[in-house]
Each structure stands twice: as structure tokens, then as C-alpha cells.
Amino acid sequence: MTPVVGKKLDEIFAHLKTATVALREREAEIFDDVEPILRLHTPLATGSDQIAAQSARANDFQVRALLPFKVEEYSQDFQGTELEQFQEFLNDADNVMTLPGDRSANDAYVLVGKGVIAASDVIIAIWDGEPGNGPGGTAHVVELALREGVPIIHLYIDRAKEDASSVRLIMGGDFDEPELGKLDSPDDYVRMLTEILAPHEQVERKHIIDYYAEVENHKNFRFEYSIMLAMLRIKPLPARPWLQESIDSEIERERSVVRDNYPPTLRMPLERGYGWANFLAIRYAQRFRSGHITNYALSAIAVLVALTGLIVPSIKLYLVMSELLLIGLLFYNTGAGKKGDWHRRWLQYRHLAESLRPLIYLKRIGLSGPPFRSDFILGAHRKEAGTDWTRWYTAAIWREMSSPGGEMSREQVIELAKVAIEEQVLPQAEYHEVNAHRMRELDHRLHEVGNFLMGSVIATCVLFIVGYFTVPDMLYSLTPWIVFLTAGLPAAGAAVFGMRGHGEHLLQANRSAESSAALRQNAKRLAAIENIEELAAELQVTSHIMLADLNEWTTTYSERSLEVPA
Figure: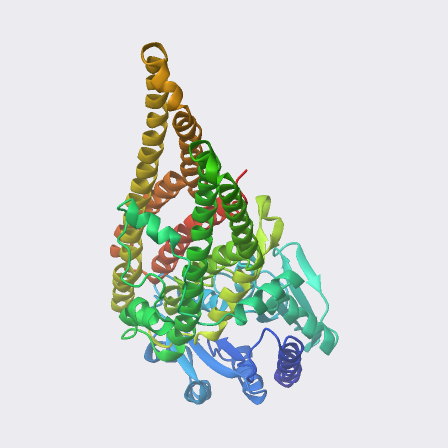
């Protein structure tokens, strides 16, 4: 049956290559203008694995050997000619990674299956469709892949007829009730890869193109938010608040710690992707937050200017003109924010940056898949709730990062856990602790300012009542000032209250405190891990902790766009 299987695999890999090139050309706006890199991840077992490796190589695929044990140990699975063939395929592989499998625990081949699924966008299963004989077999890998949402190209093997001519697509569902698709023509392969690799909505494409069109502008003259933080003694004002740090400088600061531990092909796509997203998120956060502060400030100042006419009626005309100018600035500021899409860009670019942050550790372990395999967002009961281009981009960066190679021993598992704790988990916990303190202080200071303003109003009212009965003549001459204070100070207080409410600072503080506590517990668990599967699972927990905070933050702010206060 070997020639029949080989011929059919040749067709499958040829169709995959052709479909990938066709998809890149059709989606030229969003994909890089370079030849696609195609990879086959395989344990190189005798039979189907080696036939697949041969067909993949013939169609310009890279071959990555993912082995359950060290090479010396795994070689014991082969005898005579089989061993020689295995060595030939191994020598020809572009990348070799060995896992710390344990024969006595009977988990080594399950580990390999999980590793292949984690690294793959689609699984090719050469299989008779029958239930497997145990963990790690083809049927078990198919079941695991469907749980992870990885589609299956099923090459059906009819052992009685020695035939392998039937190919079908399993796009979802489960082992007992799979969701099937067709793979009868080259167009079917293009449709399959489009479903896996391309964004699904036109609005996503627009936002991706917007992101690609961004430029690295270091000057940002919207720093009203920074001024407010400095005035409230929350955070000092930088020497040059209008200048933003360059992307290269940010990468050097944020990512220099990982460079000794990861090869360039693994870390550089992530460095650039994170650097750009983080730079732009900071830029638009500064614009949006400053625009929000300015709107409330302009509203309060407009009221105070209008009331000033009671005190200096001789300049009433100029005050009215000034009030109109302030209102015009308010609408201009709001319009600029909406036209520039500050709110959406801030939220999406920050979501993208934080989604990229944990990828380096998930990728390095070799058993964890990406946080997102597609742009689909699942709602309640795992029903589709929408799409998000930042998820698509995160998955694209994951694919661009090279797969890990080399030996993964027990000692390296322990070391990787230690590195993840030191480079990511504890720094993120510390960031959240600082942020929680800062947000509580900001809310408290704004609360104090609001209390002072309202206290001043109350004091003015009390003085008015006392003066009404004691010095009515003097009070009459001060009436314009009293109206100014009793009407103007509440307007200023309302602006401060609006800044507090719009910022949700206490909610941010509580989320950050919860995230910090969860990350510190996560660090303790990571420090005790010696098993690769446990490490993979716990690193997924790390990612989920950070993404849970991110998702809550995004949900909170998604409806808080820049508006004219009314």
C-alpha cells in the first residue's frame, strides 16, 4: 500500500502548496510579499510518517522532526533497514526537537501528538477511521486535534482493499460526530486555508490595513493626561512629555532579557510585532485619555467663562465669544478623536500587544498552541460571538516564529519555568501592583479635589445665609461672586466627577490587584514544576490570567468613546 499512500500524499502536499501561494496572492494586502514557509511536523516513525516527510520535502516543505525521546533512545524503536532510513530522514530534517518522554509512564507518544497539534494549522491523518488501540495513536491524535480546533485532512486507509484514495476534511465537531468538508479539487484546498489563515470580515481587513499604514512618529503633543497625573502627584511629568520613546528603544528595554535564551528566528518576529503594537497603544492611549481630560476641562471652563459675565459685565461680548471658542474647541477635540479613531486604535493595539506578550514562552515549550488559532471570538456555550483582527494577527505572528528545536530535558523544563517566572510572571505581577496603587491614588486625589470643590460651594452657601441676616447690604454687592462660585464650582466638580467615572480607576485598581495575586500564585506553581506537560499547562494558565485582565479591561472601555460632555 506504500506506493498508493505516497502518491496520494504527493497530491495533498502539492495542493497545500499551491493553495497557500494562491491565498497569499489573493490576500496580498495583508500577507507579506515573500514566499510562504511550509512546515511538516512529524515524529518520523516508520511507515506513514516517513512517507509524508518524503512527499513534503518533494513539495518544498521544511521538515521538523519532533521526537518523543532523545535520539539515542528513540532509535531503539527501529531495527535494521528501518534504523538506517530513520537516520537518513533525521539527517535531512531542517529542525529536530526531542521531548523528555518516559517509556515507563507510557506518555511519550501522547506528548509527541500534542506537540504536533500545537505546532500545526492542519493535521494530515493517514487512518482507517477506526478507534485507536491506545494513547498516542492516530485516532487519539485526531481526537485531541478536534478538541483544540485544528482541522484534519483525513486520508482514509482501506486495509482490506489496500486502497488510500479517499480524502475528506474534518473541520470541527468531535470524534463521534465530525463536521465534514470537501477536498475534491484545488479550490477546496484554497477554501480550507482561507478559513484557517485569513480574516473573516471586511472590517477586520480595514483595521489590518490601518495598522499596516501606521508610522513611527515620536512627537505626540497630546499630553494633558500626563499633566493631570503630575498635578495630582501621581506620576512626575517627563522632561519632554511630547516625545515618545522609539520602537527600537522599547524593544531593547522590553525584550533584551530574552535574547540569550531564544534564537533570532523565534524571537525577532515577536519583538517587532510587540514593539509596534506597544508603541502605537501608548500613542493612542495618550491621545484618547488627554482628549477625554480636555473635554471635561473645556466644559467646566466654558461654564466659568459664562458666569464671569456676572462679575465683569463690561466684557460680556468677549466672554460670549470666548465661550463659543471653547465650545468649538470641545467639538473639534471630539471630532479629531473620532476621525482619528483614537478609542478603537488604543483598545485594539493594547489588546494586540498584550496578546503577543506570552507567545515566546508558549512557543518555546513545544507543547502549547497559540492563545488564538483564528479571529473568531467564542461567546456563551462556545457559540461564535464575532471576530477580532488582533486575534488573527497574533496567530500570524505565532506562525512566523520558528518552531523550537534541540533537546528538552527535565533540567531544561525547570530552567524554562524559572526563566518564565523571572522574565514575565513576576514583572507582570509587579506592574499590576504599581498600577493598582497608582489607580487608587488617582481616584482618591480626584475624589479629594471634588470634595474640596463641593465643600467650597457649601461654605459659600452658608456664608450667604449668614450674610443675608447680618450684612445684607454688603452681600448684595457680592451677589455676582456668590453666583459665580455656587454655579461655577459645581460645574468644575461635575467635570472632576466625570473624569473619575470615565476612567473607572478603582475598577482598574481592583483588576490589577487580582491579576497580581493570581500571577504570584502562578509563579509559585511554576517554581515547583519539573514535568513538561505540567509546565505547558501552567504557562497556558499564565497566558489566561493576563488575557482575562485584558479582556475585562477591553470590555469596560469599549463603550467609553470620546464624547462631548452633556
